[in-house]
Image 1: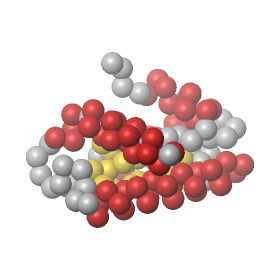
Image 2: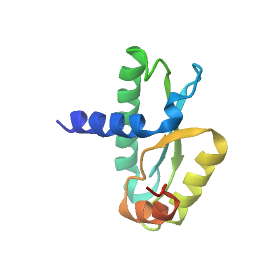
Image 3: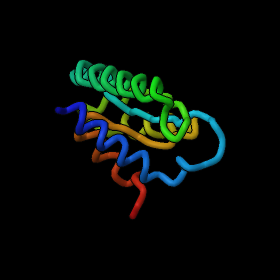
Image 4: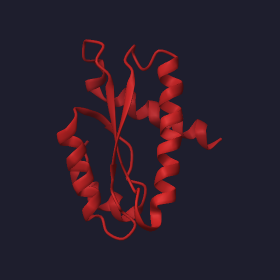
Length: 120
């Protein structure tokens, strides 16, 4: 059942993004600032594994709106402090034209990124 909830949330976020409807067949980049080192590394690697499996499944079925999905990952080390999560988020923003973000995986990192989230 958790996989179903993940996919529902994933599609909801993807379809709510207006940049998805841009013309062309360029891939859609998904940024994932997630903990890959320290006490939360196991949780982060499991999150990446789950996201990778979901993206592989979606890409095999034609992607989203005919566009392939590509996962871009940065280590947020967010178990203790959110400062590294902000650095990981910024690195992802600079690296590619990220269409959607998933993560970070722990509360300190998430709270540190609240000021960077789009306002409704």
